[in-house]
Image (tube, each protein chain N blue to C red):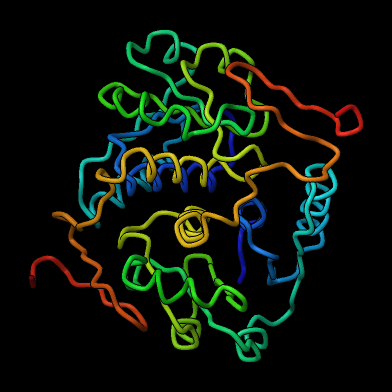
Length: 162
Length: 162
């Protein structure tokens, strides 16, 4: 859905860091694709980014379960157990302010992280963190760069020296 | 710190929904202040927004504990217990891409939600959600609007009819 580039980039980075296999971006945005591929290259992993012209087509042809994150939905804790079982083919949809009613109808679950306005980025992060905590990238893997946790300042190691 | 308006608005909404008392925005942005006050008016609560010219001054004069969220920091789970005790005067700092070293040095805790790039919005949401789950706005309160959780579509009730 039509969205701010910066917000979409954040959504893609959240998807990657919290363990999703990939993200579909609509409308297509080659700039964001490039940014995310650059992050994979530096920090590792095989997170996929794909631009799509028509999100309707994706939703209509999706074989698995569709979850739409919206403040109007039912609380996450009510459906978390059911959703967790569907992880193989799960599509999580987030949109900008005005999400067409079609998305609400097509989704198997319209899920709210509290019924208050916040952010599609935070909704996605909390959803992935709560439902699939085991999937998050807790270790750096095979990237050129590895961040070493540090109390003050930054420590980044280039993989070739490890 | 100098940031994208949309991203800052999301950060403010996350702070409100996940139970912070208020947010300081630097550089000042009257537009964002107005947006957030409008959300308070519609959805309730007394979340505070304050624009500040110099974030250095705020950090230097802060009496309580300062937490800076950064992918370079130490894992949240290591310091969560300690930080939870400091809730009365806790200042959580998030910044855009280039955060000055001064912030790392001034912070009592530099905390990472995984050592991977994601988003300051998701970092803030996960931090507040994990450390202070009891503070989130789980009930709508005294706003003109109240969202009723719904499986499909939207249901919003105006408070006067409740």
